[in-house]
Amino acid sequence: MTGVSAAAPLSVPALWLTGLERGLLLAGLVVALGGLAGRGLARQYKGERPGPLPGPWAVRGSLVGVGASAALLVTSLVGPGLAAQLASPPAAGLRSGGTAQIALLEMALFGLAALNARLHRPGWAAVMLCGVIVAEGIRSHPEGIVPIGGALLAWCHVTPAVLWAGLLAYALRTGIAWRHHPVAVQGIIRLYATAAAWLFALVLVTGIISALVLVPLGSVLTTAYGLFLVAKVVVVAAAAGFAVAGRRWLQRAPVPGAGPSLVTRLELTGLALVLAITGILTVLTPPAKPISASPAAGAAGLVHTGPTARQRSG
Image (cartoon, rainbow, N blue to C red; front, side, top):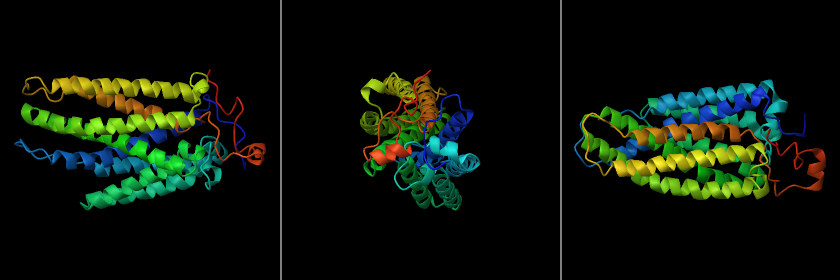
């Protein structure tokens, strides 16, 4: 199969499998890179520490990323034609969507991150994990629609999103470990909340731009991609609401043994659901047409503008 003539329908099991693999890859990135960033942020806490900070879980998160990347590599090699369909529109220069090549690169980067984290070289581990984000940007849908600019947009969106979820996960782990010292718990959550406000602003702005690039307004409620994007927006809004409620919790008198508030834990649950939806979005064909499309490319089936390629829902 040299070209992609139609997007894979939602009824194809491999679509959901690949989406799950992508979601696990993002989860590994959140745990590993977010853990490293979270520990660095927690070290800025100036109050009395009731105990040592939890480990960043960089090795564990990286190994999850290795497993997810390996699974993506296997599924793309077993079904190269379908893998090409699930990578539509492909980024320029990536044969068959580049799923296998990108998965192999990401597996190597996650492996190097795990090794460096195990050798207590957090800086180099973070560099390797940032390389995964670079690879994801090259593979991303925005890059397939707007060459070069799309990858930059993806980097600016994925990085704060990963850090938002990762910092929260680490702050919750720290809060649970220090739950019998509520003042310290509130101090850690307050540090996270300040950083999260800036990260959310970046996620919001870049998310809106991405949506405008990938989904024409008339396709929001008439395509599978548009409907999943709406679901993601709703969940992100809910997570942001929980974050605001968490800030109000910081103003209350601390209660020994309570740990982080329920709304803060619900915020993490919401972000975990966002990761799952994002994994599915990466394998759905967006309804927008690549700006580099040409009549010859359209005739060859490399660019999809028909109803099938737009993946009408239902």
